[in-house]
Length: 184
Length: 213
Image 1 (cartoon, rainbow over the protein chains, first blue to last red):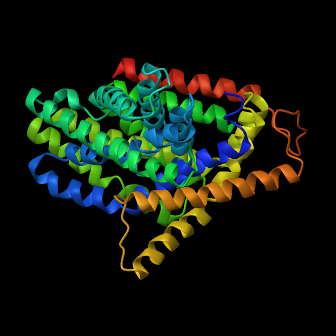
Image 2: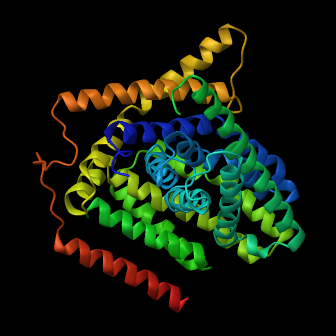
Image 3: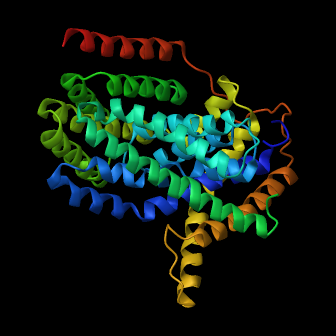
């Protein structure tokens, strides 16, 4: 722990969350237009669940790069603080959300004892992130009022999104970094 | 009020409105935050921004509840979106990330390497934004269009972040920043006892509204 979190790595970790934040904000119009399209059908929450993978991407990415306990939580919390000051769409909810997503993603790596930075780790972190953030949204975004089949659909959408962005995309990026000998 | 205590207060309120369904409390939060913002001379532009930005998610969530859930709950959720944004803006407009990090370091025992590392990285935000734009442009010149979906964009951005973090860490070390060694401070921040009292009163008032209405 002491060795991993030196000054350089802390800066790098924060920069990675900032990068994910900037790339996500640059495509913020996708969320808004998707949300607008779905609103007349009362399906706006799907916009949230389709894109959630992008929100949580910093966490698995940081874990795969640093391969150390705490990377997920730190990247999400630091990222959300920065995001709030840059003027995110969600205000105070950004910070709580960041903390919860960080814990959710971290738990996936904890369950595999921080040894599986491969597909097993990805599946585990996808599952924990999906379940925990879904429970949080039951309260925060009022998912609990929806019917059961809508909930199931939302859950599956969320899982696929997290798997694509937090899993496949993260894996592709880390593969590129490994090939260029940046990380082991 | 001390930035760290302010942040804790705001987070407690935000967590509470996430788990309770109280329309009046949401409105009170919005109105009080608005008053604080106006007293702090917020510009008309930022005021418009915080009114307009949450409009799409708020309407979206309201319509979703209207069609697939319950109407009353929809109104609560829509006002909740606004309450979050107003709470967040009240904080970011009245405190700077610098003050927050300094008070966390001096009064809440945040390790110096985290405090200054994050602050350094935060100041690089603009540079990183430019770098990402450059990476996209450079790729576009070769007729490759990078979007948020392309791993190459993340890969190249991380490579540039690696470079920047090395440079910044080296720069800080050469200016005699030593990790884990005690530091003296140019500006000493002490938390006023009155700030704790304010924090407790605000949280207490929120509980009263929650119970009464």
